[in-house]
Image (cartoon, rainbow, N blue to C red; front, side, top):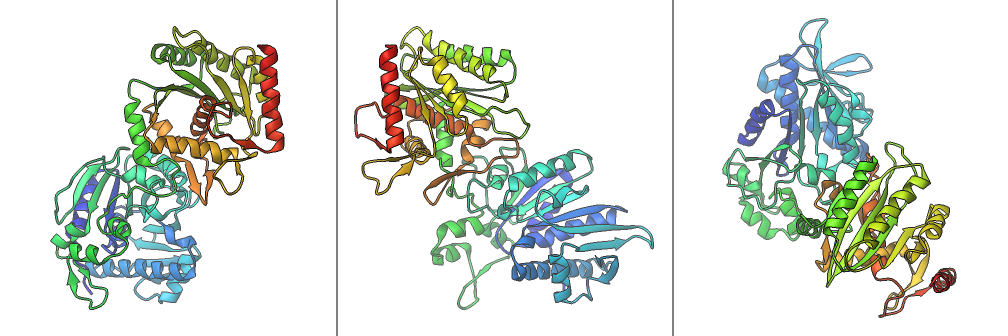
Length: 524
C-alpha cells in the first residue's frame, strides 16, 4: 500500500521548517493526522534521541472512539514506514517492544487507551528517537520536545492546554509545535481566536492551500474542499459513492453551517458566548479613541486611568459598576470597575479598570478617586448611582455604601436573589436579568467598549447555557469580571427607580430597596 503525499500536506511540511508554531486547517478526512505522523517520523529519523509528543483529543472520549483513533494512527504509521522503506518502528508498552507492522488492532487500541503508547525509531542498539501519544490535557503535554496537537478544535479547555504548551516551545529554539484541526463549532473555543484568519480575508483556490497569519501571530495553512478538489481529492455522494464537486456536496447538505466548518474550513460565528463576536468587535472598533482599559498595579496606573477618564468623559448620565474581589493570588479573579456614560441611545464604557489587592482600604481609595473624578467633570455632575456586587463580599460592599453614600446613591446587588419581571413566566435571578439586559444592548448595537484584547477575552468567557449565564475562569484569573462590572454600571443607569415597566422584587429584596430609598431621603 502506497502513501501519496497531497499538495497541501507537502506545503505544510515545508512551512513547518519555516515556522516554529504552525497550524494546519484542512477539510475533514484530508489526512491531518497522517501528515502529523509523517512529520513526527521525519524528526525521529533526522535527530538522534529526539522526542515528539503527539497530543490526541480522543483519548478521553470513550472506548469505541479510542479504537478508531488508534486504528487511524496505526494505519498512518504503517503507511509511512512502508513508503519510507524505513526499518520497522517499535511500539513500546511497559518496556516490551513490538513492531507497529505486526501489532494487532485490539492490542494497539488497548495501549492507546492506557496512555502507554510510544513509537521508537532505533538509530542503534542503545540510541533511539520516539513519538509519545498522550491525551490533550495540560498535564499530559508537559513533556519537552516537539509537539503535534491533533484536532485542537475539539479539545476541552484548550486555553489551559495552550498555556501549558507555550513554556515548552519557549524553552528551546529547536522545538516545533504544529496544530491540526477543522474550525470548532463554538466560537468561544480558544482555537477560534488562535487560528482564525483576519476578518474579510479572501483566498484563491490552490491545490496547496493558502498561508495566512492569525491575529494572535500563528502561521496557518488553510486547505478547503475546493483546494483539495483542485488537487484531485473529491468528495463522494452519500448514496452512490460517485465523486462530486464541493458545490454539489454543499447543495445536498441540510446543515450548511456544519458543512462550512468541516469542508469550507470557515470559522462560523455562533455558539454559547453571551456576547456575539461581531457585536463585540463592532463595539470595540467604535471605542477606539473613546474608551480605555487600565490594569492598576501601582498608583501611577490609576493616575493615568483618571487622566484618561477626565479627558474623555462627556456630559451624559453616568453609572458606575463595581465587581469586587479582595485577593491577589496570581490566578485569582480581579476586581473590576466600569464607568459608563449614556449619550442618546449609545452606552460609552469610558473607563474599565481592574486590580488585585487584599487591602480593602486600598480598594476603597481607588474607587473613591474614580467617583471623585466623575463628580468633578465640567458638565453633567456626579454619577447617577454606584452598583456593587455584594454576593460574596457583603461586608466590604456595605462598608463602601457607608463610605460613599453621601456622595451618590449606592445599591448592593445580590446576584443570587430573584425577581419577577412582567412578561417572564417565572422569577429569574439578578445575574440572569442584568446579564440579559447588557447582552440586549450589544444586540441593539448600543455598546462602545475599550479596544483592548483583555476586554474581548474577558467578555467572551461569559456564556449562555440553558438560559443561565455561566463563566469558566481563564488560566490567568479572568472570570468575566469586566462583563460583570459593565452590567452593574448598566443597572446603575437604568434601575428600578426609572420610569417604565415595574420590576417586582421578592420580599427580602423589595425591603432592601425601600430601606435604601429611605436612607437616601434622610441623607438628602
